[in-house]
Image 1 (cartoon, one colour):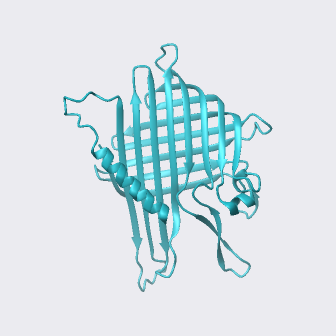
Image 2: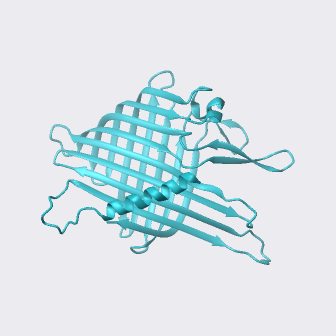
Image 3: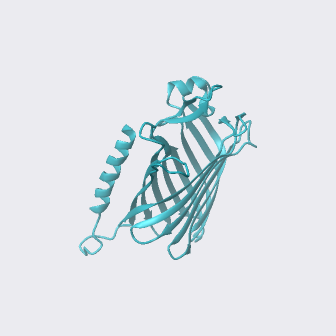
Length: 306
């Protein structure tokens, strides 16, 4: 839970830094090429049952979201930076049941692009994508007697992924597609227990897996479907030149945002991951690489700065 406390401290400090940004009405200050934006969300749901003939279980869940953007644009270049944070827990059943993690992510992106040959749409592109999580993660299994047990599978920086890429981007309003023949991927497992297990594709006992020479493709869409309805998608694919070129790692995120008014909104999000080197327990009980999928529907408060 200490990571959750750090998240709250970070969000509050960033909130005040954005709140104290330059006043655009102050004519004595120069216009900055930087544009900043921050948003904070809180989603909460609760179901309470007492002597309910239809059956069911009481439940409570809460999820916090934060998103920060800082972009710099000049006549020939663009530098886009974003940080997306999320953490959620839920409890199903009475007060004796523990809370369990339902959402947990840290995604930091930085993208620099510069015009090629005075073209309006084609650009040289350098990209960094880093992602990990705040808190410990567990999967829940039943033994032969039907008793549930939790198995430790993840924590902060275990795993963490750092993708870097150099290439060419085609960009128009709300859409960009990048092909990067000079790409790399680093996988971190900075936990002794998981490292010894060889989790997330690292060699047993090692804490970093380096895939230094590869090719990647990235597609980003930010499209206003209609008034108060926004669609965003981010697709990243990576393949290493050496040995396993046909094996492609995929990270794909989608978000549909319904704006009820300036304060309330609803979001539908999906996350898809495929990594040939990550073994998971499939739905049929077998173990091996598989498509990982997560979806969530959230309704709550969203406050945006400026």
